[in-house]
Image (tube, rainbow, N blue to C red; front, side):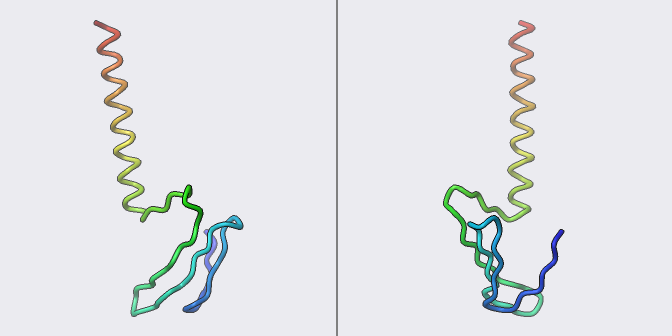
Length: 72
């Protein structure tokens, strides 16, 4: 993991097309802004992990259905 120090109004660039800007610092919370191409999905990590879990469950359920259909 790369750890950087940034102040309010400062930014960093990822892969030449994603910019992360520090918008506000209030106590222990930091508000960030992300500029990225529309085709780049951006999720909060907890949402991303939930999507991954649901996708895995759907694949598992689909595989079970396929096996049931195959076995008759």
